[in-house]
Length: 89
Picture: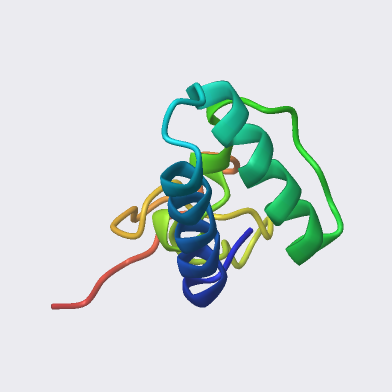
């Protein structure tokens, strides 16, 4: 997962690559993104639209029961284990 500042760096890097070679297709751009992601995290993923899934801000809190991330920041229950967060208004 990329934190907000890392995500910003990734997007800026990709925009720079796209402006340097505007005629390259999206697949080549995703290869650049994968290389940059690998330098930041030490991990790699297959080139594809998976890059949009590694942004930490897109997910919610960590479930106190199973430790998985909630699927959205507004989620009130864990899709993995069903833990429910009771929000007191």
